[in-house]
Image (tube, rainbow, N blue to C red; front, side, top):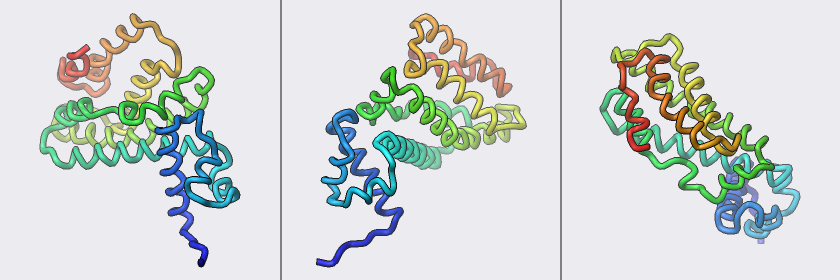
Length: 206
C-alpha cells in the first residue's frame, strides 16, 4: 500500500483535532503524545516535527478553539442589523469558550499552569480585540461612542476584564470580584464616552 503524504497544514490540523478529542475524552493529564500517535497511526517523528511537547500541542489546541469561537461570533454578528450596543449584548449572551471546552480549559486553571494560562489569555485578547474594535468603530459612526482608538480601547477593555476576574491568574476573593464586575459598566462608558447606563446590562443578572 502506498504511503499517504499529506500537506503540512493538513497534517498539523489533523494532529490538533486528534489531541483536542483526546484532551476532552481522556482529559489532558491522562493523554500522552503516544496516544495521539496511536490514534492517527503516524510516526513518532511526525508529531514531534510539528509540536515539541504536549504543552505546545495544548497551546495549539486552545488557539484553534479561540479561532473557532471568534469565527462563530463574527458569523452571528453579520446576521443582525442592530446598533453597536445590540451587538455587545449579543456577545454577552453567547456561550463562553470555557463552557464548551471545560475539560481542556480546566487544566489551565491549575496552580502550576499559570504561565501557560497567561500566555494563552494574551493570545485570546489579541485575537478577540479586532472583533470588538469593529463594534466600537460602528458605535462611533452611530454617535454612541467617541474614541479615536477603537482597537486600543478594545485591547484595554478585554485585558482589564480578563485579568481582573480570571481565577486562573489569582485566587481573587468573591468580594473583590464583585467590586470589580460592578464597576465595569461605568468604566467602559467612561472609556468609550458612551451614554450613562448603556452598559448596565453587563451586570443585570449578577
